[in-house]
Amino acid sequence: MSAIMQSGTPSPSTDLHTPLSVIHGFVKAVENGSICKELAQECILYVFGHNIQGVSKATRYLSAEIKNVFEHEHFEEACFLREGLEIIMKERFARTFDIERRKTSHLCMDRNVYNVPGDILVTPPRPANFDMDKLQFIEATGTLKRLRDSESGYTFGIGHSAAIHLTLGYRHHSQGIEIYLAVYEKYYPISVNMSSLPYNPPNGNDTEEDS
Image 1: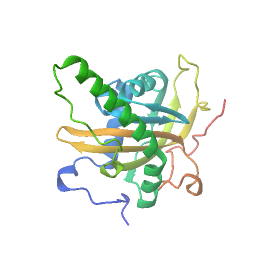
Image 2: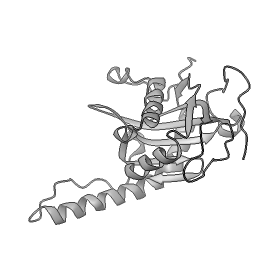
Image 3: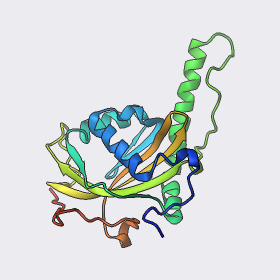
């Protein structure tokens, strides 16, 4: 099997967005502050046990706790999730997506009621349940290197640096891709987090220092 383990074969129109290019695009957007443009309205951000829902809250959280606080390093390999891991991710976050979908649907309905005369709805009603089968899931391993303390003082148990596992769920649209799920977790041996990828920092001595 090739290094990129695909749960499905991307269509020719999506070949430009390889797993590694999507990961690098996400990392770049987080670090330069443009991540809001990459996230879906009802996105879910999960960062070391902290669950953040919605694009506004996710953008603020990444800006406050990750941007200029940590540097992403060694993200040199990425792949599509194996089918079994994809199923686990869908089951793990399906309920959270459904809750966020209902929230955003209610907000759209409220805006229409107050801003549009009569019974006309500008935003068509959306299904109550979010269809996660429309997402593609990819993973990568790398390092988060701490540059300074965040304003909140959160360290996530990371001293100088830590090996991490990054999972993204995204969907293609006419302008590119839209990220619906971003999951930061500590990287553990394959028997624990079942990652398809190894973690091999170039210098071989990056270690996690709990604080």
